[in-house]
Image 1 (cartoon, rainbow, N blue to C red):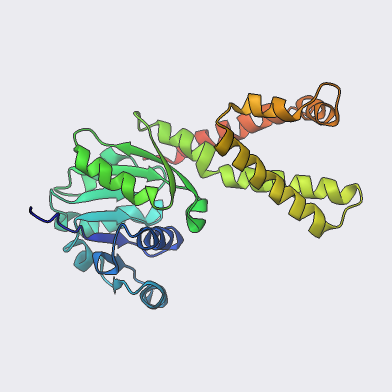
Image 2: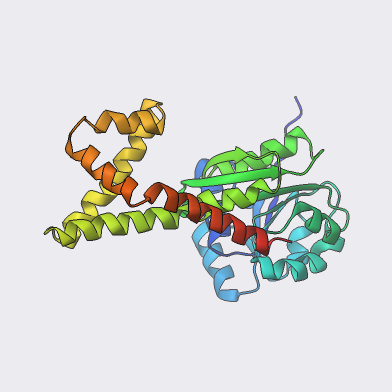
Length: 273
């Protein structure tokens, strides 16, 4: 039987998200160090990545792309135009191009990337740093099932993946899960402050708040019930939880969260190319 070719992954940019993906891919065993290379202009970052993960690093993006089967664009949106102008002529048609640059459409990438035909957009979130990302993926039409499988495997190494059928829905993904960790941290901060206000030490209140959220996520994952059904498990009629939920509804917390996701989505739309 013919051995399956080992793909070569080239990252353009060696920032935190690229590092999170590198770590996830290596930890999962999906890729080896010899398969991964990073193009990064900052010498300090190159040295840090090479020392930490034993991967190949390069100063120039062109040299990285020339050896790639998969090219992951891990640069800031404002840098992607110059990057694509640089590497576009060197991207062959077989290369799978994956962009994690927020707001940059696959059509725009296609127009700036020479012969590249297989293009994917991904919207991971900051929890990729600890292997718990929620990543939305959009596949440009006709990229092929194998390319889809490769992309899902890469981001599956750092968390959960979902696929959206319409590219514009990635703006909603940005507003919900892309920005979502910040909403959760604000909630944790507010719970902690409430505990302190009522007399707990900050350390105790923070530990209780964090474990409460951790445990709630565990319940939702393990019990396989709707969020409303899970809430009913805790909210006994006439009890303390019902009193607390009533205060949250009166404070329009549900409406405020909806508005937060909506406003973040609208801002993502405004920044899109």
